[in-house]
Length: 188
Length: 246
Image 1 (tube, each protein chain N blue to C red):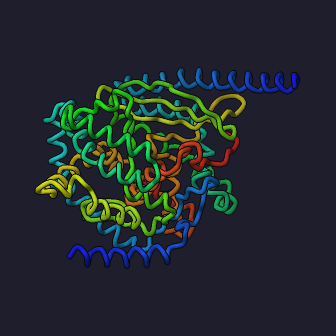
Image 2: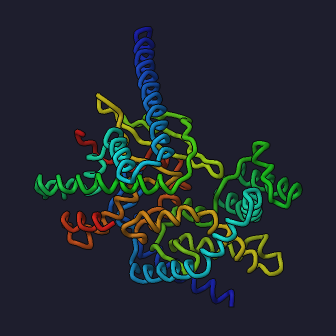
Image 3: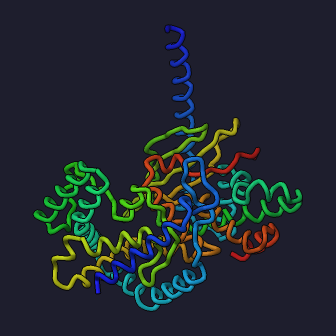
């Protein structure tokens, strides 16, 4: 019984430690993100580079990009095709976030809670400006060297789920052609 | 006329609910919530209706909404939103009774009484004293009774729905204690519709800009929001990508 309690204690202290690490990481990166949103006085290409750096550093871009097209298509595509897709998707993700951030007014992101399920951290935060506030959830993984975001959920709408249904539609319309998907993404 | 409408709706509902597989989607996540390939047999019609809705929105509704948002101060906007939300408390009460959620049903009665008596519903005092608002409707009641969602439909002017939720809306129209007992209920319906449009204005602007296929995006968002109302651990159970070495 004593050893069992010690084991529980060790497990609990590890998970608490990790939760505090991810909270610390989140506080730092969300502040940096707000700083990028608020300091948009430079040229468009300067601002784009700031977003690019932030997203490459904090998002699990490859996992998101591959997750959106599914394993079957990954296995049927060449390395070259996948590499082009990854580049195009990264650019698309940066532009999407850049556009959304540009159309938002500056505010604050406050961490509310951290939950863990299946080794994925679910960070609940509130994003607010003078007029409105919204629940913002971040699904984050620990890669061993850093934390990376695999999904962002605004209120109840998940970026990953929404984009997956959009990409699936394009792929179905084009008989599963990755090339067609790349062309469609580039058009946006 | 109403009797005929009820019979027609019943026939449509029974036909679709019986021919629709219990899970209308191809790919199902671990939690049982499904998002890919939402059952959408009348997609071409739905797309045409959505385009029509955007056209009407562009020429008529959006300018009204933008002007209203520009003119109305924040407290007024909030008050109007509270007013229409309060009018739905009696129908929420009925829905909760059908769901067997009696505590929430009493809560809705209490909220309606307090907010109506203190401010005609324009100020949500009930929430301030710990009686939080619980959203529900007859579509949710049907879903909790294991009625499948049926095909996705886009309704003219009203927007995205599915056969189950639309049936729920029709039932609400006939049994809502408020709108059945006030003169000129159509004005309340129009006011409520405009208020709901105001509430999603920013999201709608983003959908216009950030999507390769706004039809798919709206459909996905609609289902995600409905599932969030049905599933307690919705956020935890959302599908996530497989992890690749970054």
